[in-house]
Each structure stands twice: as C-alpha cells, then as structure tokens.
Amino acid sequence: MANIFTIPNRIVAGEGALRLAGGELPAFGKKALIVTDPMMVKLGNTDKVTDMLDSMGIEHAIYDGITGEPNHEMIDRGVAVYQESGCDFLMAIGGGSPIDSMKAIAAVVANGGSICDYVGKTLVNPMPPTCAIPTTAGTGSEATSVTIITNLQTQVKMMIKDPALMVRMAIVDPQFTMTAPPSVTASTGVDALCHAVEAYTSTKAFSMSDMFALSAVKRIFGNLYRAYECGSDGKAREEMAIASLEAGIAFSNASVTIVHGMSRPIGALFHVAHGLSNAMLLDTCLRFALPGAPERFCDLAKAIGVYQDGMSDEEGAAAFAAAVSELLHKLKIPTPAEYGLDRTAFFDAIDKMAEDAMASGSPSNTRRTPTVEDLKVLYRALWDETSC
Ligand SMILES: NC(=O)c1ccc[n+]([C@@H]2O[C@H](COP(=O)([O-])OP(=O)(O)OC[C@H]3O[C@@H](n4cnc5c(N)ncnc54)[C@H](O)[C@@H]3O)[C@@H](O)[C@H]2O)c1
Ligand SMILES: [Fe+2]
Image (cartoon, rainbow, N blue to C red; front, side, top):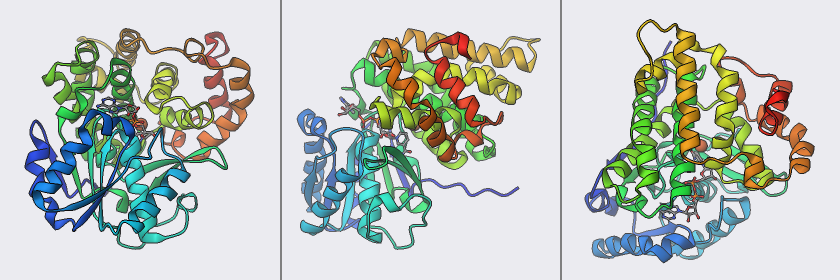
C-alpha cells in the first residue's frame, strides 16, 4: 500500500541551529510576526530571534498573547496583530502552544473566518511562510501538520490536521530547551514518548513512520530521565530535542491513538497541561492496547533493550509496558487525584469526555479498537484500578 510522508521543507537541527538557519529567512518575507508567550520574552529567547532578524534586515512584530494552551480567542487576537502590523510571514518560539498558535493564525490569515470552523475542512488558500523554534522537547509541533486549539464555546480541544499546517522551516536548537524546569521536561518528554509509541502501534503506521517512531522511543528511554534529573546536561537535552522531532514526524504521518484521544478532553475540561494528561493516561491505556498488537509492543521492548531471548511477543510487550511504568514513576507523574482534580467533577464529565474522545477519531486508530464504553471504564480506572 502506498503512503504519503510529509515533513517540513527545511529542518535545521542541533547545537547552533538558530545561527545556521538565519541565512534562510530573507526568502520568507520582509516582516515577521513572532508568536510567543510571556515566559519566552522574560527568558530572553525572543530577543535572540529578533537580534537575528535585525542582523538580516528583516522587520518584526511580537505577539506574546499565548498565555496558556491556545484557545480560539488567542488566535483571533493574533490574526488582528498580524494584519495590523503588516507582516508577511510568521515565526514561533516556545513550546507547542505558541507553535500551534502560529499555525492557526497563518491558516486564518489565508482562509478567513474563525479557527472554530476549521475542523475537518481542507485549507485551500496558500498560507504565509511559517518557521517554528521549539523550546520544549515534547509536542513535535515543529514537524507536524496538526494544530490543537480549544474552542471556548464547546470546551473541545479541536484537532485540525491539514498538510498546509506543516511549517516551512523547523529550527530545533537545544539551547532553548535548557531552561525547562523538571516538571515541564518530564511531562513534555512523556508527550513525545506517547507520540512515538502511539505512532508505532497505530493502524496507520507504515515503514517511514516506523523508522522515526522506533528511533524516538530509543532516544527517549536513553535520555529523558537524565534531562529531567540534570537539566544542564546538553547532550541529554539535544537527544530529547531530536527525539521530540522524530516522534512528531512519526505521529504526524501515522496518527496518534487512544492516549491522545482520551487526553484532549481532560485538557479541555480540567485545564491539565497536555503532556501531563497524556502521562496520567499512558500506563492505563497501554494495558488496554497491548493485546491488540503484542508484536509491535515487543519491537519497542527490543528497541529499548528490555526484551530477553526466548520471550514471546506477549512477554516482550509486557516488559515494555513495565519499563514505561517505571519511567513514569521515576518522573514523578501524578495521578489525577494526586494532581488535585476533583473526583466528582471528573466522574460527572466522563460521558462527555468519552464521546468527545471517540469523535476526535484518534482512539479508533488503536489496534485494539475501543468502544465508548471502554473509554469510560479507562477514565474511571485512572482513579480506581478495580473499576477497570
Ligand atoms: N501540533 C501538534 O502536533 C501538537 C502535538 C502535541 C501537543 N500539542 C499541543 O501543544 C500544547 C502544549 O505544548 P507544550 O507541552 O510544549 O507546552 P507549552 O507550550 O504550553 O509550555 C508549557 C509551559 O512551559 C513553559 N516553557 C516552555 N519552554 C520553556 C523553556 N525552555 N524554559 C522554561 N519554560 C518553558 C511555557 O512558558 C509554559 O508556561 C498543547 O496545546 C497541546 O495540545 C500539539
Ligand atoms: Fe501530544
């Protein structure tokens, strides 16, 4: 069967990437809108980008209104800033939130209307050039044709997927991830792990996505805990930045599955950061998914070195799940209860969450296909293992 494999037109990755990529930018346009968050301004990351643009004689305006995971109002304001300041291309510096926002702003600039109308639609008009500079090693948004924006009216985290959302250039410079605190390093790193594991075990996986997914899983097991424990370890940070990129490429082409499907409703209704809600679900969802693809999970066990000679596929798959549990434990990932979510409010929302998760399409990519009832059981199991 033939497959289409999509990646950014340019990927500049590794130490010194920002400097190396600068020469490419004059071809993007004359004035950049830099989409970012207040933390990036405070850390001086935005200055590094504007200094580089100044040295190239490229004008710029800054929109730092991404004050959390993006919602449609942030996008509306960004579109207005882009238009009022006469920009002709966009850059984003930050985690997945500013990068997703930049893509959504570019889409609305080109196609009009509201981002809330874009789910399931084809983006027909050519978009202004986009360039993403990630500062978390997590979402891989710098190499995905996806943007995730919360519709505040419906309280749904909309997943919008279109080849036009792939950025023209990704600058993956690990210098920007060095300041991420341990909790952000852990949850965003587990987000990348979910991307890679879900992509590898998705019904839509194929040879090219497999290659990136396997490499990402290997790198994450080799480096995430080190980056969490010792944030100043430049090698571990660089490996995680590459792993996040690889995992993004893998899932953008092969899709995510049950973890992400169930995670978005938790984020939308309870404002749990994306990586963290994935991390809370990963263990429980893996145990559900394992019987649907023991040979695939066994491959992952081989990739991270926990497979032992003579193990069956099922035993290898179980060894991989155990290694994931141990990593989550070492990264101190909280349960919903430990995080402080309200049990009653959560249980009251389970019906909506299960419906919204299923409607997103992601759970159906799991090789053991879940029903809406299965998703409800799994949500309950996050609180009470015996209900699973
Ligand atoms: N488009 C995609 O393919 C895709 C994939 C997965 C997730 N997402 C989306 O991405 C968003 C989450 O992105 P994220 O997990 O990268 O987090 P984020 O961008 O929301 O950032 C989380 C926090 O970390 C801070 N931060 C980021 N980098 C930092 C650094 N280097 N030093 C110090 N602080 C730093 C930010 O200021 C923010 O407070 C969610 O909305 C999620 O749905 C998108
Ligand atoms: Fe994700």
